[in-house]
Amino acid sequence: MSFAWHEIRDHLMKSSSTLGFQHSFEAIRRAGHPVAQYRDPTALLDCLHQGSDGADHKNLILAALVREAQSNGPGGDCALTLMLLSLWPGLDAVRRRSLWRKIGTPDEVASEILARTTEAIRGLDLRRVTRIAATILRNVERDIIRMRQREDRHQNLRSEIDPDEVPIDAGVSNPSASQNLLHSDLARITGKDAGLVIRVAIDGFSQAEVATELGLSEAATRKRYQRATRRLRTGLQEIG
Image (tube, rainbow, N blue to C red):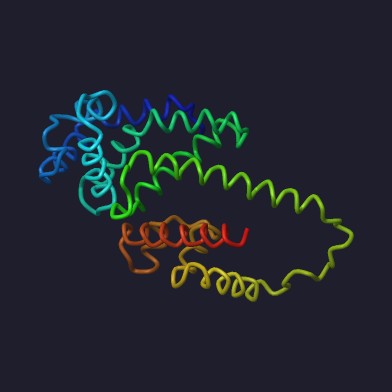
């Protein structure tokens, strides 16, 4: 089921008003970083969106939320939701520009922005970032544009190939051999987590299911999958 862009935000806002969310927020406040001075999520978001505090203070708050979102602590999902809501005005601008560029349908663009923003937050290296919000928004928009450019190049390439000129035995007839070749190719780019990428992205298993299969925690599996897909995208960009 698809949701309009504003409905996604409404859903995030509604989830941030629940008792469970407030308990998670209190866990973040108890960690002792700049979030502690805000009594509830609304006060925090008001500060980030229109408060009089300077950019440096807001950046400290965002850094604390990113660390929480990347942790396995009780406030991880809460911090991720707060990050998405704090970035929403910028994400909305990215969405409008993406639609203007005809990158995809409204549903496709919304899904892509949310997925890439979540991954950007979970994988952000705070040691290499000066302005967190600007960096995440810039990277999300850049990656969406590059994705469309790659798709356009691949589509143009396919349209230039005469199907009659493709040998009927050009593919690998043995499925297991094909799987081995795929694993080998991915391993050169993603390292030891090639099998994890195949199980999730190709075989269709959830990260929780693969975590059980590999004997890992779901959080560890998620981080390894995110790290592997980042390497894969970088490798594909270099090839393209």
